[in-house]
Length: 235
Image (cartoon, rainbow, N blue to C red; front, side, top):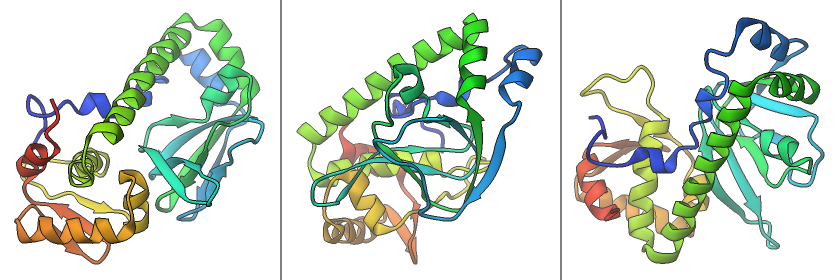
């Protein structure tokens, strides 16, 4: 089912898919000059925190986790980027190092766009510049929502909300009535929710008993998104 009118999914999505949409043809061609597409295996790192950026990355197929690593080497995933999204442009705009890590959640095809191309097109296109500013502003709001979530919600509520968001991320050619399979390891899900793996397994078991989800190996199928929305208690 669609979430329109029952859950504000836009508050949890960076919406970077729209940045390159319908750019003037000459600028789009210039942007894609000298690009390289590479296939990354599941779990492969695209860029590391602290590295100097040499370009941006366009996800042509697959999903990527953006995360920080603490002193105990634990990952803290704060966003899942989907097919069609751009990553890595924040560091270039800030003229700084990458502030986080990015790694694939599954085998993915990533297009590398050189920094010089990106900056040249940005300087020539008010459309691109305005979209970047709008997207950065929206991303700040999304991250603020995430901070609030961790401050005020229980693990069970956070888990419900993240599964709702992931359900949207894993839709492929979705039509009403179709099931959506979330293919994510329990460790990655725990790092996204901000809890221990054991808690994720326990809560998933509870959800299964309540008829909210089904599981097939590592795949999670949400059978009652309305119950998840009620548990998330998001207003």
